[in-house]
Length: 123
Image (tube, rainbow, N blue to C red):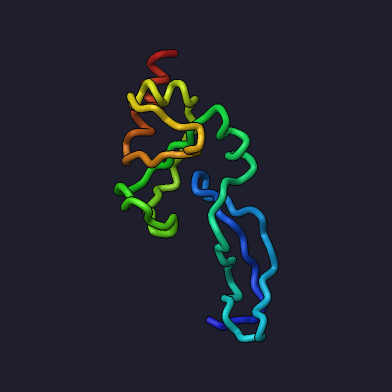
């Protein structure tokens, strides 16, 4: 793979994995360090859509296995499945208080399928 001193970078949403806040990256010493074929992750932050929902909703991110405490988002083994659940409902389902400062939580594989099935049964 060839490299370039110019690259594209973007932040990634930890809930929906959407790239946003794209920027052109330029290596200050013009050293060929950026891969030409893909974007570079410059950080993790909520995208505008997930950020606007985080006031009333908690993002549930499905992962293969529970992440280690204080692990970096790049180390999470996300399945790509996610859902937004009202904070009041999430607090009742999981039986724990959820601070407003927490925009999302990890859930084990199968939890989202169970919640979907329960919500369909209730309809």
